[in-house]
Image (cartoon, rainbow, N blue to C red):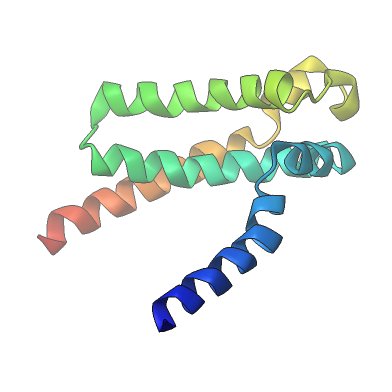
Length: 123
């Protein structure tokens, strides 16, 4: 009885809030309002994700760099073809490539090193 009411309440909450936010169309609309900021924060988030993946799968040296660079290039494809952000919306095709590149590289390398050091000293 209690479990079913908790599940029902949880599903109603998820149904009303999370499912609506998870729709790709909502994300696309938010990216159209300020595409430069959206691309920047997407790349910062991907830098954190890639550094965690590199440490989790013990990717060091060249394989880790390939994953990091590959994810950065995939972020261009995500912005251009999935979110349909036109280069004119951010200035030019070159700017679409370079938005957030400094933050991505520095954060990715710093967190990769940081998480790698913690993983080696903690265990």
